[in-house]
Length: 496
Image (cartoon, rainbow, N blue to C red):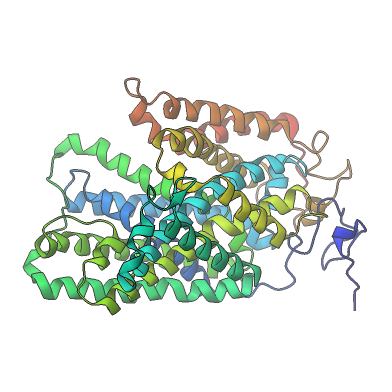
C-alpha cells in the first residue's frame, strides 16, 4: 500500500500515476483520479441541474418574447444549444482523459504557474454568481414562509426590518440556503452527484404538474408559443435570431468553460457525449417548450404574463402546491449553484496554493466571498452588474479559445500528465518561468477587444456587438494564440 502524505504539511505526496509531483502543484483533489465512475446519466443530470432553475426558466421564456415567430425561436435554440453541445465535447476531452480538473488542464496552455490566471478569473465570476443565485433562491423560501406564516410578512420589508440592503426575513432565507449548500458541498463529490441526480428530475415533475394544472384551468386552446407580438419577419429576423443564438451560448459559457471539473469523473468520452446529447439539445429544448407553454397559460388564467416560476406557483390556491413548488425550485437553484458556481472556484482557488488550500477550503473561500459582496445589492444595481460580471465574463471566451487552440491545434490532443505536476524547467509546460507568454497575450487581446462593446454599450452599434462578446473574445484569442504559439510552445511528442 502506497503511503500518501498530506500536501498541506509541505512534504511531497505520492499519487497513482505520478512520480514525485511537486507539492506546490499537487494535492489529493487536483491529482489524477484513481477511478472514473460517472456514466451518461450522471452527465445528463449535471446538465438538468444546470438548466432547471429560476434563471434557466426566465432565460428560456425571454427568448420567446423577442418578437420572433415561435418556429424561429426553436431554430435559434437548436442552433445555439448544438454549438454548446459541440464545444462541451471539445473541452471535456483533456480532463476526461487525464482525470484532472479545469485549472490543471489549463497548465498545458498557460504554464504550470500561469494556469492561476484563468483559474482566478473563472473563480471570481463564479463567486459573484454564486451569491446572486443564492439570493434568487432565497426569494422562493420567503414566498413559502409568508404563505405558511402570514405574520412574517412585515419582516420581508427592507425599510421596516432590514440592514445592509436585505430584509430580516431575507437574511434568514439567504443564510439558511448558504448553510445548506455548504453542507451538501462539504460532503464531497459523491454526495453532490447524488444531489444533482435528484434535482433535475424533481423539477420536471413539478413543471409537468404546473403545466397540467394551468391547462386544466385554461384549456388546450389557450396555449400560444409566442409570448409577444411577432415583430420581425424575413431578413429582419436574422439579426434577432443570431442574438438569440449568442444568448444561449453565453448562458452556458461559464459551466462550459470549466466542464472538465465534471468530465474528469466520467468513465469514457462516449459516456460524456451521450450525457451531453441528452442534457443539452434534448433536455434544453424540452425544458424550453415546457417554459413557454406554462408562461403562455398564465395570461388566460391570471390575466397577465408571468415568467417567474416562483411567482406562478404563488398564485395557486393550494398552500401545499405553493410550498412544494417553491421548495422544488429553491432546491433546483441550489443544484445549479453547486454545479456551476461552487465546485469551480473550489478547484480554482485550490490550484492557487494546493499545499494550503484543499478543495473544501477553496469552496468555503468562495462561499464567504459570496456573502461579503452582498449579492442582493449587486442584483439590484444594473450599473454594478454591468461593470463587474459582464466585464469579467468577457474573459470567458478568450480562455476557451486559448484552451481549444492549444489542445487541438498545437498539442494535437497530446497531454503529458506527469508534466502538469512538475516545476522542472525541462517540463513540457514550464514555458518561461512557469508562464506561457503566448496564452497570456492571446487572452489579453481577446478580452480587451471583447470588453469594449460591453463598456461602450451606449455608443451606436456597441450594444449589439456586446451580445457577441463571447464569440469575439474566443475567436480573437484562438487566432492570436495560434499565431504566437510557434514561438513559445514546445510540443512534446509523447502521447499519454
